[in-house]
Structure formats: C-alpha cells, structure tokens
Length: 444
Image (cartoon, rainbow, N blue to C red; front, side, top):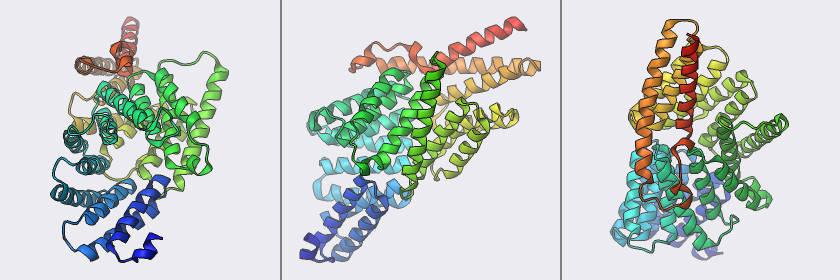
C-alpha cells in the first residue's frame, strides 16, 4: 500500500523496501532479503546521490547486514562502514543507531574471520550504549555478540557471563518465554557457552526448554534458526559423551539415532536456504563426529572432507576446527601420517590467528600426545614424542587455569561462582592423558 502511494522511485519507498528486507531476513528468506536491500540502496542513491541522508544510512546498514548472512562479506563491510560514517555525521557518535551499526559491522568482520576486529567494534558499541539504560535491548544485542567473540577467542567464562547477562535483559524486555526469538537465541547462546565449560547438563536443560518452546508453526520449523538449534543440540550431546558415556546401551542407541535424525533434518532445512554454506559445513562436521561415535570412520572422513570443501573463504579458524575432526577420522582409518599432518595444520592455524596461549592449541597438543601414545609400543620415538606433547599440553593447561581464574574474578552469574576447573573439558582430558601416560610408563 505504501509503495503504491509513494511510487517505487521515492526516497520513502527505499526505506520501506529496506525495512521489508529485514522482515524477509527474519523469515529466513535471505535471497529475497538481499534482493530488496539492493533495490532499496539503488533507489536511495538515485534520490540522494552521495549526500549523508538518513535513508541512505538505513539502506546501507540493512544491505550490509543481509550480505553478511549470505557470505558477501567484502561488500557487506564496505556498506556497513559507509553507513557508520553517515550515522555518526547525522546522529553523533553516541546514538544507539551508531551502536547497532557497530554491532552489524562486528558481524561482518566475524564472517571474514577477523575476530579481534569484530571484538573492537563490539567494544565500541558497548562504549556507546553506556549512555543508555543497562537494560536496553541494544545492550543485550552487544553482549550476545561479544559472548560469541569471546568464546572464539577462548574466553569461555567471560562468554558464559556475557551471554547470561544478555539473556536476562531479553527476558526483562520480551518476557520470560522462549517463544520470543531474542529470548530463544539468548538461551541458546548461554547453553553453548556452558557446554564449552563442561557444564553439559545445564546446557542440555537450556536447549531442551528452547526446543520444547520453539513455535510449532510449520514455517518456523523450516527456518535456518531451527536447523542451527538442532545442530548445536547434537554438538553438545557429543561433547558430553567424551567424559560421560551412558551405561545403558539401549539409551546410547536411542540418543545417537535421535542425533542422526536431527542432523539430517538440519541439513534438509539448510539445503533450501540461500548461500548458507557456513552452517551447512558446521552440520557436516557434527555428522562426521557422530559417524565416528558409531564406528563408521569412512563416512566420517567423507563428511569432514565435504565440510572443508563447503566452508566459504575467510574461515581459517573453522578450517582448523575441522582439521582436528579430520585427524580423528584419519586416525580411525589408520592413516597415521595424514592424521599427524591434519593436527599440525590445525596447530599452525590456531597459533597464527590466536597466539600460543589459546585453548585450542592445548587441544591440538593433547591430540598429538594421544596419537603418539598409540604408536608408543612400536618405537622409542613414539614414547619420546608422547612425553614432549604431554609436557607442552601441560604448560598450555597451566596457562588456561590462570586465564580461567582471572575470568572468574568478580563474576556475577550464580552458576559460575562455584565453577571448578576440574569441570573444564580440556583439563579433564589432560588428567586422562596423564593416567594413560603413567599406565604406559609402567608397561615400558
């Protein structure tokens, strides 16, 4: 109706089309979202030229966000930078729309793999939102995004704390119900952060609540958000199995069968989604992990190779994550040399991107120690390498403990106040390695 009133080449029409692109984005129709956002930008440019007009800022902002979703990250960041400059000129540096712009820009940088730059933009958003109420929804948006960045950077406690703060704001704003999209997504972010701290039972409770409360409407059950929920639920289940394998074999088969169905459903949903390569690759990664639990290393190897091929560019840290899974599949297929190469590849990527003290470096060292222990009975070289990697992983774990201690200082979230280092998956894995190494020494 509004478009008919103003015509398709009016500045108001540009804003309407831009906002309509956001609606389609929320619906999961990313192709239509980008199309409308591009059309809106074209009209705004024709009407305003290069002037710093609010309509141009709106169309650039929404186009940049839409392009970030579908992997057009170079164009996305350029459009978001241009929108930021206009918004600062029009509204000043402390306006909430500037904070939202920083948030969207951080998302673009994160899609490019520029994690530190993404964090910088989020800290800029935090600085702006300090001028507003602490319960403002844009504060929650910033905290939620910062939680994700902190998790990637290995700051797991901080990630869980930020996610929980964001969730509480969403609940204050929208009500304590996971039927609301932001509350739902906030709860999933808390669950995911908890799982990386080894609090898998708590994580599963959050996800169970989200899944049960997820709107039953058919179109929402086909939304990419639901596919991501199914994938993360499976990932957390598989993480918990490393240290807490159910005693009942029937329960194991039921859980693994359900996980397989969830991942297949997630793949089906994502196959209909326009250029959602990153999420498709992440789903394939979990399929590979599940196949290994079922003892099918050949399928796992095929899935993880397919996942690596599917990953878009600018995903180096994810390539490292996937290389770890590939090394496990190669180890299961007795491709020992290939497994070593995959681990070395992952280690080099992690060190180059995050530095020597990142928790994922510790994990690669632990896996290298485990692989060497498998070969220790064949040669002294295997024994020596196992000791070398164990000592290196031990030092990495000591750094991790120190970092966790710093992050826990002044923590406000109740479930983190009594957190024990012994719950952390990396530290639990180190204890298991120590027992295995000691046992092997006795045999030697």
